[in-house]
Image (cartoon, rainbow over the protein chains, first blue to last red):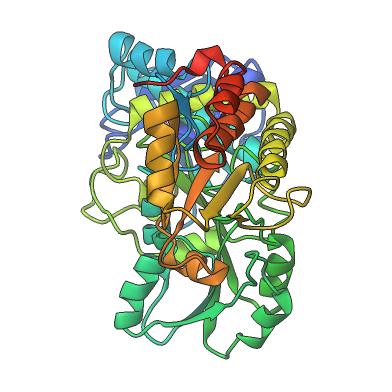
Length: 79
Length: 404
C-alpha cells in the first residue's frame, strides 16, 4: 500500500524520510497535494506493508492511503 | 591573516577546514530556501539543516533534533529564552561572572519587575555553590549561568548547579559561549532545561549562526520573540506551536548552517577532548612563563586546574591598552583589551574598570606561537638591553613576523 504522511513541521517530514530510507521502504519527500492540505508543506509518500501502528508518532498529523487518484484518510492525530 | 591572532574567545580564527568551502558551495551551487520551494535543491538544503540539528544533538547529547533552534548568535538565543520566559514578579539567579548577553536582557527585564539575585564568585571567578541555595525564594523561576568565564577562563560547576535546580524545581539555563567545542558538554548530565550556543567561537563555524536547545516543558512556556513565515501551517495567521518552527520564523541563515555543518563534522572527527588538551597545554605554558615576569597579575584559577584556553593579564606597571597596542604594532599579536562585555565579572575579579588583556588560544596555535608572545613581552616590557632583545628576536617564530 502507498501512503502519504502529513506532519506538523517540515523537520518531522525530513526526519521521517530519513527513517524510511534507513529501513529501505521505497518512498520520498513530496510537495503535499493541495487537496490534502491547505498548508504549503512537504510530506512523505512511501510504500509500506506493515501495520501503521508501527510508524505512528506524535509528529504525524494525518496519513492517507493512495488508491489511484483517490486519497483515503486512514489516520488522524487526536487534537 | 598577517600576524598572530589570539582573540579566539571573541571569535575563532582560523575556522575549521571545509567551512569556507561549504558556505561558498551552498551559495554557488544551491542557494535555495528550505520549507518553501519543493524541489530537489530545496530538499537537499533541508536535509543539511536537519543533519546539522542531529550533529548538535550528538555534540551536546540533546535528546531531540527538532528542539534545536537556530538563531543568529548566542545573544539572540539568550534574549529569546529570557524575555520569553520571565514575567514581572518572577525571580532569577545568576553568577557574578555573567556576560552582558545575560546581564543586559536581565537588567531590562528588572525594570519591568523581574527580580534578580547574583551569587558572588570569589576573586578567581569560582562559584560557591552553597551560596546559590541561599538565594532561592518562593518565586524563583530559573537559574541562568555561564559555563565558563570569558574573562578569567574559570569553569563553573554546572553539574552541581543543575542538581540544585532540579531539587528545587527551577529551570536551569546554560550559556556555553566559552565552552562549546572545548569541554565535553552533556545536556542531560547537566540537568539543564535550555542550553544556548554560538557557532563562531569554539564550534569553529562562521559568524551569524548560533542557536539554543530547550526541552518541551520550557518550549511550551516561552513566547517567541519573532513570529512570521515558517513554510508550515500556512493556512493560519498564528505562529505554529511545534518545534522548531515556533522559534524559527523567517528564512534561516542557510550559508551559516552549511558552514556550521562542516565545522561540526570537523569537531567530531578531531574529538573535543583532543582539542581541549591541546589548548590547555598552550595556555598552561603561557601562564607558567608569564609567572616568571614581574608586575603582571594573572586572573583566574591556577593554570593546572580546570579552565578554558584563555588567560587574562593585568599589567600593574603599564597601561593595559598600551601593552595590547604595542603587542600588535610591534609584534603583530592580536589580543582583546578592556572589559570583555563582562563588567560584573571584572568587578568580581578586582579588575574593574581598568580591565585586562585577554590572550585566547586556539588548538590551531603552536608552542612556537606561545613562545613568540612570551619573548615579545620580555623584549618590549621587561628589558632595555638591546643585546638581549636581539638574542630573543633571533628565536622569534618566522611565520609571525612583525607587521610594521
